[in-house]
Length: 435
Image (tube, rainbow, N blue to C red; front, side, top):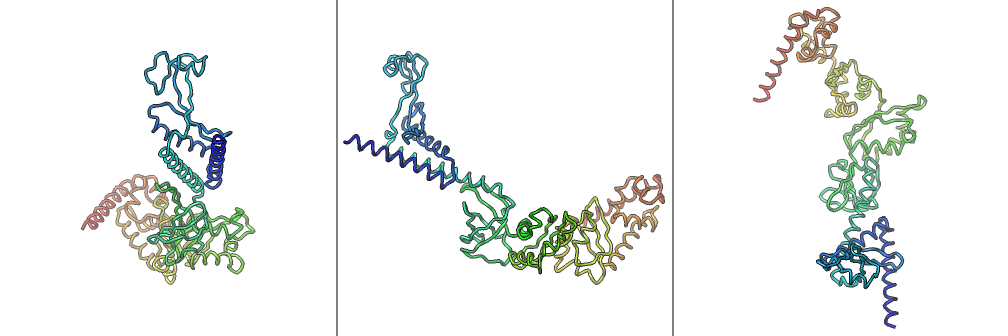
């Protein structure tokens, strides 16, 4: 009767272990084979602490639902280390056909590990499961960078929002929140995944609501033509919570990209404005030609002239005198967004100021012997704004730019003099900065 009770108890424990493996696998999303490997590792680690120096192995027996523990011993003529060796004479008591050099495996009851050993197994198994769960969460989210995600605010920690996103908690740092927006525990929130980090406590998903990608993803959700690939968002610039600019284009001449983004009676863009707490959004047409793109980006101001410096990726933008403040925007906001959107350095000036500026530059260039007002004007139109710009020309380039007004021979002393003046300017600037 006692033996029958022990058998029932062992079966119950085996069933309990199998159920535990299945539950952990299902709830934590960890492969069943991995959980079994963790159990075997935990058993063998605990056993090696109790049976020091022995060659041991643990194997999960699926049929009986138990982890079996074995020690290996090598068959030798003369035993020198009884922990890992067995004599040939003794070995043949277990296997008459065994030969010297063979290895025998002996089962050790797992129950011999005792309470301390069992506790060690439990702790190590828990640690391995936690590690596997963290790794799975990291792998799940690392490939979701640059995606939009919806979660629920759990709590506030030093200004940072902790957000439940399902399998884990993400963090929306204070610096990544739209200024003046307020969320409370229980509020639903949408954000953009900017990064997924490995830290000691597990994977950390970093969210943002100020990233340009957040605005881009909101448009992808609201505008079916973007999801279908008909309308493209070519560039995005933001001053979060205040104003944004996006540049759009269409692959279909019958589809107006701006109209598609605005929606019927402005419904689509208004949904996004509400999500961004009233952030105003300028939707402009993208153009592959940089100058035309910049003109669109500086809207609503009208552009009269554009002077490009390709090497420095800089443009001088000339606008009507009465539109200078419109072009620059409140506290420089419009031009800053245009710079972000286009990637060009922009110097916006009124027509009156530009004419004065042009006269100053032309006069300065005309001071170099061999350069008259006509050539100085050509240099200015080409984008030259300082002596160093002239110094970078080769004699051939300068001659061609002047339409032959300067020969290659005459160009050499002009370039040399420009270098001297450029060095003087640089030295003067350096001296002024050090004062």
